Image (cartoon, rainbow, N blue to C red; front, side):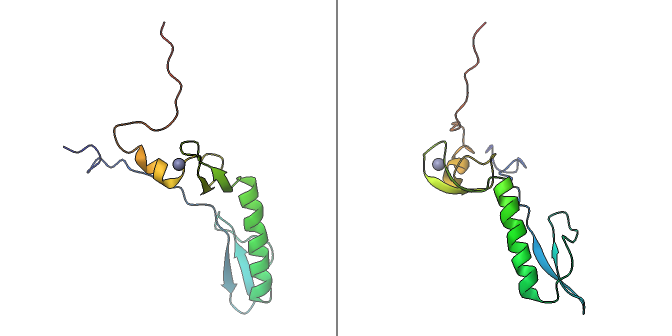
Length: 110
Ligand SMILES: [Zn+2]
């Protein structure tokens, strides 16, 4: 039997925390944070809310260190989800097989 098929274990890619713009009826537009709550006041127009959303997202991305990073395995530059994400997608997929591709520290004998 194949190890991967039906095992229920697969690649889990955590979604990036994202900010979104939402309509607040006649009040205007608000920014919803990753926690589902409104971040900041309601803006009268969509453009103002969108500018605030972009600023909050950029701040959150910088905090999480999302952005271009060199893959630890092949050295290729890829868009990383954060400090925890150090392998590019092809290299991450490769370790689904029996051969481990991730660098690891050998356990010392004795
Ligand atoms: Zn790679």
